[in-house]
Image: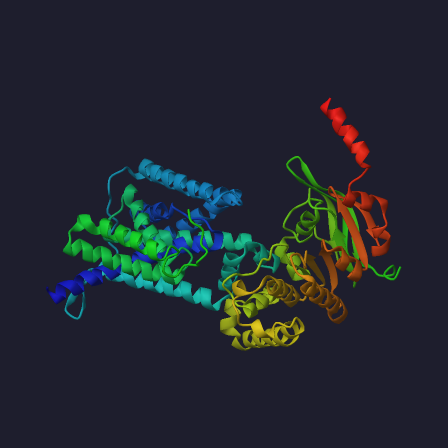
Length: 292
Length: 274
């Protein structure tokens, strides 16, 4: 076997894994703070890609401004969804809330199709095109940029939660909402903040994913792989999303290269099944997590 | 009465709380004298926990006013009430799972900490000093006081029930409360644990000067340590006063033992059936 080829496949795998991890962090953030399994995360990611397209190609803004605006759009959407759809569902069964997010996903797909049509589109080029070599192994520049961006954002999140009082508030809310509220933590604000941060992150990830592979209304299926990532990592663990994302990225890339593209999902989901049999709460998750 | 001269720290005035068509609290009025131990008692479903949740800001009453230290609490959210000095524990223990005892207790100070992330970066010294002061107070005063030194680094989930209740009390004390609300502090405890908790509650009142408002089912303990008792039944205050007076109140006895004689009830049932 060619070592160089293997190295390149693995690099590409880690690159796409970083985007899984980033989206996974968005998912975990919402679950940790509000115990809501947000199945619309893939569609919010898609919307991020389209928002970028709208700002960059539609309004002709520079790429960096379009990126910032796409992230802001994601954040606004998160705020709106939390206030209008999720908060009224407070206290309802987790399954109901989960269904609301599925409905939200369908609505977002429909809206995007109304606005931009169903065909795949390409985002305007905004990333450097200089090939990146690590040793002798070639790495597509977009994948490298995506990796670096994801790594920076995830590191920022980890630092924020470890060293700031927001992290304490999030951890306390995740531990017991009533207790958190009673010791002076503004739980509704934690909910809002989690949705805003998570959806902004997902929208940003959407721009990166779209820049690499193009955008289409069906790119929300990316969220399906992310679901595998967070289940493997543990629904409420940010570190778990990181490890799970890189792992799934690697496994998919290796399966695609050595078994053929059609085996990617088979291998991933087999891995998921096996892991769930051994550790039903994921690699790093809280043991008493509820099952859906 | 011993406490007659003191100003009330908490005044509940004609509070109404409904869930749909169900009246949980109707026209509830009473006041808690500063420095007292006031107990709210009543049969199951009388509205005691609803009352607690209303006072701590978890529920919003449809009518009525609650005043704390002379200021109204209308429209004040729970976190702000906590910052003003209203601390509580829960009937079903509400601790932060996955954290240690010490971290749980320190979180009680959250509402009072002034340092935020920016401060922590810019004024490293102040953040550090605040943390040190907090640690000293929590460790020397609260943990020693409640006799939980040996478990300070244990995860709360692993502790026995009685100890978890004690950690919850410790967290509430870390909030430097002016009034401490305890929802069934000795529920599910054995005799010895109950006596320990009663002693802690009395000591909190004596040493901290904290006013205590508690909901409790253990009549022995309520009569032993409270200065003032409020009796709720079907969401209404049916009696209030000194423990001894309340104990011999006809309406209270009827609420606890059921009204009327057995023959009367039997006749009513027969009449309904006919």
